[in-house]
Structures are given as structure tokens and as C-alpha cells.
Image 1 (cartoon, rainbow, N blue to C red):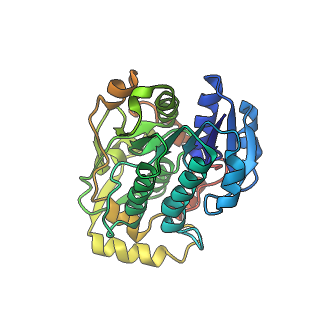
Image 2 (cartoon, rainbow, N blue to C red; image 1 turned 90 degrees about the horizontal axis):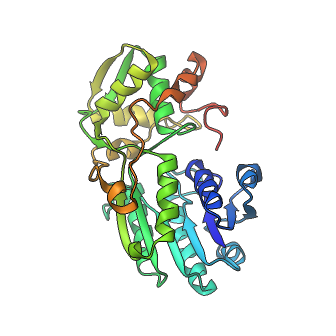
Image 3 (cartoon, rainbow, N blue to C red; image 1 turned 135 degrees about the vertical axis):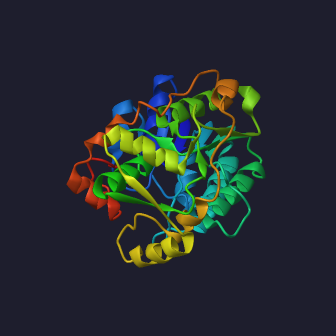
Amino acid sequence: MILVTGAAGFLGRHVVKTLRQAGHPVRALLHTGRPEAVTPYGAEPCYGDVRDITSLHQAMVGAEAVVHLAAIIREKGRATFQGVNHQGTANVIAAAQEAGVQRILHLSVIGAQDNPRYPYLRSKWQGEQAVIQGGVPYTILRPSFLFGEGDEFFNLLAGVVKALPLVPIAGSGKARFQPIWVEDVARCVELGLSTGRLVDQTIKIGGSEHFTYDGLIDLVAATLGARRVKVHVPLPLMGFLATMMGVLPRPPVTRQQLAMLAVDSVTQLDAVERYFGFQPRPISGNLDYVRRLTYVDAVKATLGGLPRHIRDH
């Protein structure tokens, strides 16, 4: 039995599907309702919270391996980076060790580092340390940004491009990214569990192309058939605007996310092929799903609220 945390999320659903197609029995840990996100694949739903170690002990019963995906990319209320990404991971490892779990695959992120300037990236690094020091054989995957139907990042970019004639770019726009298809990451997760040669390794993965942030905006605009003028805005001014947008229920960008635009999210272009033996899907030519956004959807996305029919996780 493989326990998957964060199973109802954007990546989690694809991981559950891929593991089931490979013949693995799967238990899907859900934070709230929505078992329909995993039951069509034949996964066993259970409920819990990585901040509640008692619920983790219950979820671990009979599990031989754990895929730990549960994390947050922005803080809200009591859901903090330290509480979920760091301590939540430490809780998962402690429960796994007590349950006799034989293997854990942990999803981190390229750029994870011990730098308080980047609270999200630091919390992901701290989560990695909990895994490394936890005593359970592990594989840590550090992907670049994920793309695929229902993603948040590229649908938000598309919303801004579609809604605004002038597209604001924070800073120079020269930070580099290597987007990777969500189903390719799910495949890497399954292969990472299935092979012993990746035990106790931390592996960076990305797609088959490098882009600057400017280049991603150009790619999204070309996909939408839109001509847009990019306006580079100094980071201090963008930080001020992000602070003002903090009054929104779900602001499209936070000051912390702006700061991370200075951190490259790339690795070697052949990383997936070298470690996992297949070529990842390129993002070029595979962003057509952003065309589903209507103008009303785009305005909502620009204000930070992707409609349910675009992002339903």
C-alpha cells in the first residue's frame, strides 16, 4: 500500500492515477472532502492533516511507502509555511518511521534553500532536512514549475495577458524557468519509488526547455494569439502593489512570491531522461488549455480568483 498525502491537489490526482495504472494499491490522504478526486482511480480515501500526527498514524496503517506531496505555496490563516511545509513534513516522517514504512518519496522544489529571505523556499528546505534525517529510505524530487490543464501558474499568466493590454513584469524578467508537465512529474514519482538506485538522493527535474520569465509571457501571449506590450516594473513598486492587493481574498501575487522571481528554477535539460529514462513533454505547443479562459475568467484570474471550471483543486 502506498499512502499519498495531498492526493486531491493538482499533482496529487495525477500521482494517484499513475500509481494505480502501474498496479499499486493506493490510500489517498485528503485534508477535506472531495473523495471524487481520487476514487475514480480506485484509490482508498482517508482524511487527515499533516499538522495532526494522530491522523497520520491512522493513515499509515499498512502502508509500505509514502508519497508526500502536501504543501502550501502561500500562507493563509493558520496554514503557515512552517506549520505545513516544515513541521507537517516532520510529522509525516515521524509517523512513517513508527509505522515501519520502507520508503518515502518527498516532493520539494528547485530553489529550496536555507535563506530566510525566501520563507517558502526555506520551509521546503527544512522539510527536506526532516526527510534526510528521518531514518526512512527516501528520494527527494525537486521539480521546476508544473504545467497542465488546471494548473495555477500558467492560467494566472494567461489571465493577466488576456485581461490587460500592458503586461506588468516584476523586475528584469530574466529569471529562468524549466516548466515540466504534471503527468511527467507523476511518472517520475512512480519510477522513483520503483527503482532502488535512486534511494537517498535529491534529484532536480524539469522540462526540455529553458525560458526566462519574459519568454514565458511571450509563449502565453502567442498561445492566446494576443499581442501585448511588456512593462518592466521595479521590484520595490511591485512589492508595494502586492501589499495593496493583500486585501483580496486570494491575491494574484504576494511580496514573497515576487522576491522568488530572483531565483532561477532550472536544472540540466536532460535530467528526466538521465534519471528516469524518458523525454519530458515540451511546454511549447502544449499550452492550448489556457485558451479556455474567457475574458471574464481572465479578469477574475487577474484579481487572484481562478474560476472553479479552470482550477478545481
